[in-house]
Image (tube, rainbow, N blue to C red):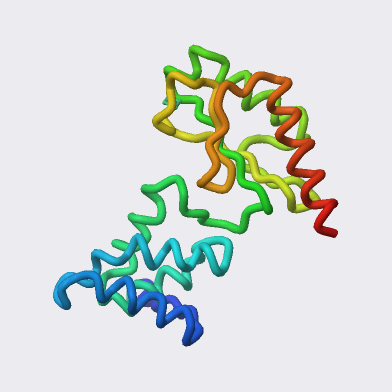
Length: 175
Ligand code: FES
């Protein structure tokens, strides 16, 4: 008989992070603090760049819910990173309406341009390329989302190249 699986060590959040969690939890009745799970996971991702299994355990401990329930949220929503990502995360929609209007072509062009496959990050850590479910902008296809916030529409090959060049140039200006 196998030994019981040891429980995962949870991450130790900073006082500032705990205060941010508390502000989200306070928006709900005390017996419904689990409703703050998405907000807490978003805070984790903002601060750490991704949601690690240890961070999931930490959020579960704080909200008094099973870690598997937290993990179900992390894995259900495309916006949560389950592993470290590059500075710019590019989510290209390839759902059917976009697939019919060059969504796949856009993804393949970025794979060639960046020299990576979907799901991978460039060696310089700048770009992570991902396939995405519907982004709610089917009429603007091909579409992609940069860092879960900035929607880019009608992404022709030229516009994709301009986007990559622009993001690279922006990082050089900062250096
Ligand atoms: S199918 Fe691509 S945005 Fe809706």
